[in-house]
Length: 62
Image 1 (cartoon, rainbow, N blue to C red):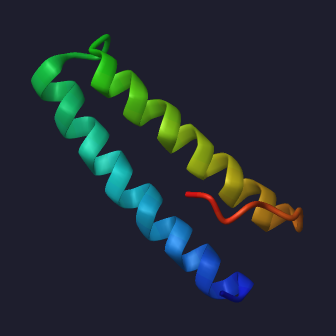
Image 2 (image 1 turned 90 degrees about the vertical axis):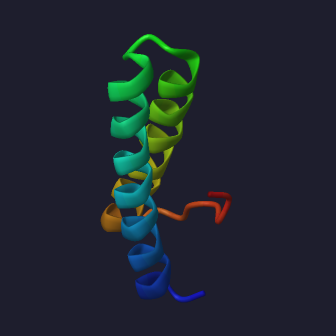
């Protein structure tokens, strides 16, 4: 997958995961393990996106 497609894929995954996390947080609370798990996954996706924007190599493990 080229960088542009990978970047667009990350943006979609970030947006979808953010929406899911907000739904879980509203339903189960901010301290619920599922909310924290999704937040951690979201952090990792955002970090990968930032690395791409700065030109660093990232693994394709999403």
